[in-house]
Length: 224
Image (cartoon, rainbow, N blue to C red):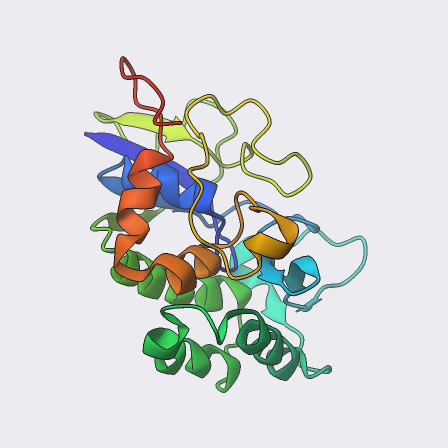
């Protein structure tokens, strides 16, 4: 059995979902310190003008290290309305947005207090829509190395710091993005490793197949 260790993320990228697709258990890191400019509070969607980052603002005291579990969302600006408008504009003509809109919209109407909770609710929905069956657990403490508290028996793949918008899938030899239809690809070309939101809106029930084709498994050739 394989365990995958990941950080929390706002509408995680396809690369992260490929890691989950190859694991029986997902362990979410809940004891690290918050790191800015990462997928923890940012996702990438495909707009008419190209790749567009959407960032959830967080309330954070400068110079104070804060556990990710305790990071609060900042509602002083109408980010929910702006995100939803951007998502609608990007995907309303996609094949599956109309089917999923009622599932997505509540995230932009109710106000979750903590970023971790918002991300987890989004994650569980996205896993369900993608057809991924995986057990979710949490770290008991922060460990930088051996991860003895995560699992004593299973193989554990630590993917916490491999997946970052700063270095798009740099040395990940097990992730080979599979091209799929995107609304604006005829205008701007295919954009790899966007949010799973992009994959779901464009591929719907075929999302799992795309994830599997984008994952290079040991001893088997790439699907590209």
